[in-house]
Length: 207
Image 1: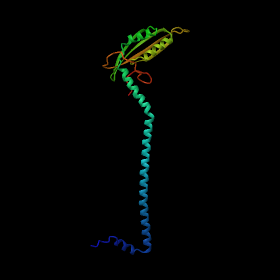
Image 2: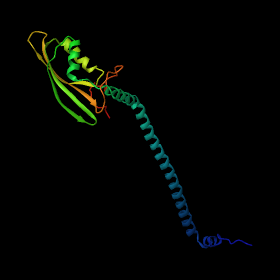
Image 3: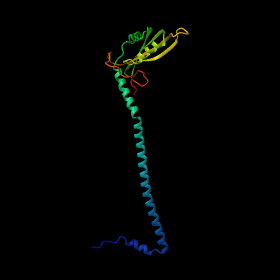
């Protein structure tokens, strides 16, 4: 069985063209081929460019993660330390501050409890107190002892004024607060955890 020659009509049409028409058809065919090849090259280059840009973006993200890694790990560790610290509920602030002041050779005056506040699963207790006619060194040691406590307590207010001009005697007013996790029971810890945040402030762990 003889297969049909599908190219025969095209050959007959070509043979019927005169020289000028053949030149025009040849030029047209070349133009079409050039356009097709150009489109293929453009598509390939565009795809390669897109892949290169995507790879550069991915690498930039990986580099950023690498640079931020130590800070993120430190932040996560601070949060874990804060969680451990908040498990140690502070005792009554008045008694705690009296004992801390006594250990630094100081006597408190006018320790006044402030209204409690509850928010986000924590209760904030705070007091106002005065240290009359004290030298700065024991006052600073007293503040350091509060900030370095094993409990989630912090100083939120400090006012210092001369008790007597020309002397190393000052009146110091302070506000001290404690954060309790709602439902946590008071108890002394076995060891002192680190401070909850880089700046030493007490409160719910940073998100």
